[in-house]
Each structure stands twice: as C-alpha cells, then as structure tokens.
Amino acid sequence: MDTFFVAATVALVAIVLLPFYRVMRGPTVFDRLLAIGAMGAKTIGLVCMFGFLYGRFYMFADIALAYAVLNFIAGIAVAKYFTRERSPES
Image 1: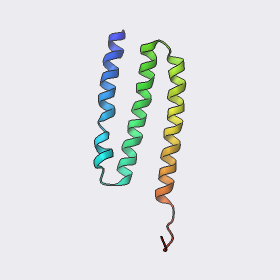
Image 2 (image 1 turned 120 degrees about the vertical axis):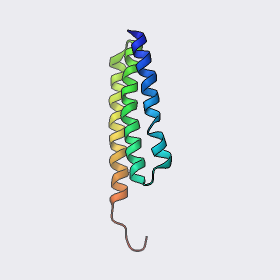
Image 3 (image 1 turned 180 degrees about the horizontal axis):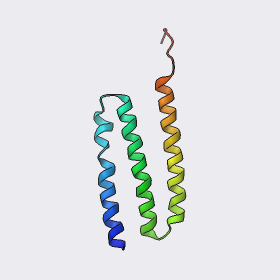
Image 4 (image 1 turned 180 degrees about the vertical axis):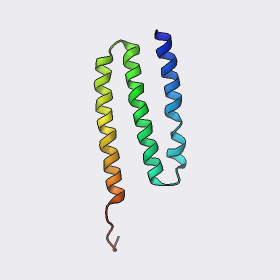
C-alpha cells in the first residue's frame, strides 16, 4: 500500500509542475492567477498524500485545510485588486 502512495505522490508532484508553465508564460494576469489556484489545489492533495504516507493524516489534514483557506483568501484578494475601479489620475 505504501508503494501506491509513493507512486501517487510522485505523479502528483509532476502534475503540480504542469501549471507552472502557465504561471511563467501566461498571456494575462488572470491566466497566471488561475494557474496559481490550480497549483494550490494540487498542493492540498499532495499534503494529504504525505499525511497518508506518514500515518498522521489528521495532522496533515489540518495543515491542508489551513492552506486551502489561505489559497482562497489570496485568490479573492488578488481578484479584488484587479477588478477595482481606477481613478483617472492613476
């Protein structure tokens, strides 16, 4: 069973790196924001997989929940920053 979790963790690390290209080369800021959100969601799964591997899922689940809330708040803050009205002087 541990072999399965190790293989799944390695695959998940590879999948987390896929949106990194969009973060670096995204044509717009919103593409980059979406890619960062995708990386955050996959990282939450990766933290849970580490919890299974170490046999302390409950501790890692708390860390994953805190990371999810932080990722959500950061996404809302950045979206609000880019959608606010700009004054003509700026």
